[in-house]
Every structure is written in structure tokens, then in C-alpha cells.
Image (cartoon, rainbow, N blue to C red):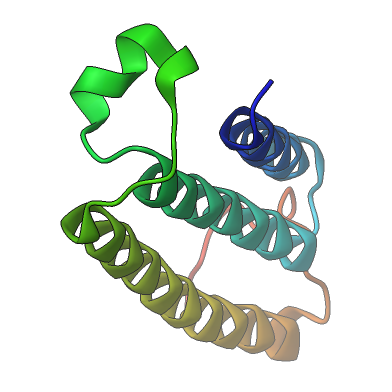
Length: 120
């Protein structure tokens, strides 16, 4: 297996762990950490594709030909996607933690099963 395959495998494992954490855990703080883990796994995949595949449709059918990219446009596109995902993750963390703190101040608990309705 090449370095690109191992990096994509790591990205898939991290994304799977994050998805399992969101599905299994009921604490909203843990759920937000798992969502952040999933977003970071997507960032790793974007960066890997930007580094190792100059033209994605030509590379995927025969993935044994993965080589470091000499195409500056592909690397720039991947970096832009990573930056956008990081921006969305930061905004999600700010808004999500503000909601969790507001709920905790009113109810003194933050269990996702107990929060079936959000009345003010």
C-alpha cells in the first residue's frame, strides 16, 4: 500500500470513529467532539487528494498510479476546501457550545435523550 492509501485509510477510520461516537453517545459535548473528528477526517482526505491526485477522475479507476502531484491547481483546490471545512467547524463549535451552555443554565443537565423539545 502506498502512502496515499494509508492516509486515506486513516481518514476513513477516523471518520468511522466519529460517526460511531455521534450515534452511540448521548452527551452533546462528546457528540460535538465526534463531529469535529469527522470534519478533521474529511480535511485529511481533502489534503491527501490534493497532494496525490492531479486529476481525480483519471486516477481513481486505477489507483495504483497515485503519485505526488505536480499540478499546482489541484493542491490549491484541496487547500481551499480544507480552509472552508475548518471555517465551518469553528463556526459550528461556537454556535453549538453556546446552545449547550444555554441549555445547561436552564435545565442543569445536558443529556440528548432528555432534550426532546427546545422551548424558551
